[in-house]
Length: 360
Image (cartoon, rainbow, N blue to C red):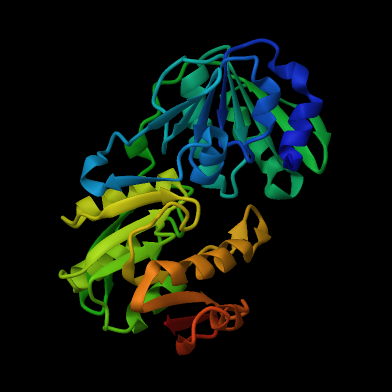
């Protein structure tokens, strides 16, 4: 049981939670909440790994993209007195007195969570933010001031807690106000991409993804999994280019699942979506996996996600299956791939990215 530095700081300020009706937004671990198991809480998770660890019964969630509408989706699970939601956003108003946000990486993602929290607590309610000092907590305090008087509560473990007393009521969070729809054109394929703050390469076509789409092999057939799908850029492009493919998409992020469903709908497409921690809980075999995988956890470079993914990808692929992966050139992936795949090729390169094809 390892508490993140953020949760260690909250533990040191445990008296903060004695009063009020609390909603937690994106806790960074599943363990701090155990300290509050005597108290009813609402916990909103935009990340499936911590959600699954909190509720302990859900290995992965499968969606049909057509079932996800603009109003989002919500998977609810109770654990004692705590109600956990895996969802991209909450649109209720004045449902709580206090909201605790764990500071996300992207500033625009934080702005969106702040706006959502302001609707949830209303006038006189309080928004608290806990985050690592090097993760941008100082600029977070500036953003919070627009909602009311803001002060630092405590600092330790290289983290800080900031609290804002909300000075006026706010209407319910409106997802459409934060959605961006872009049109991309590549290799004569013209398609729409819907994204929101907090989703990988929000509002732009990532250069690594562009390389993968431009230079991928055209041997794809059968079922193809877009792992760490983000806004669904790869899956939607491939479906447009090769309508005979059966696409599956997976991501740990509820915002990514939501945006992928919106991207598919914008292109009159449909696919199976998985919310999962890596490939855990995804059992159906696929012919090909295409991915621009994450190599960050929070602000640190982290290979463990990709290492585990490569290992699990091998089990998920059919006999002649292939894995197509784009990554920063500085990352040690050729070696990692060669540990599990007998054939590994570098099929394209730029100064920044390499495209690898690994085959069984």
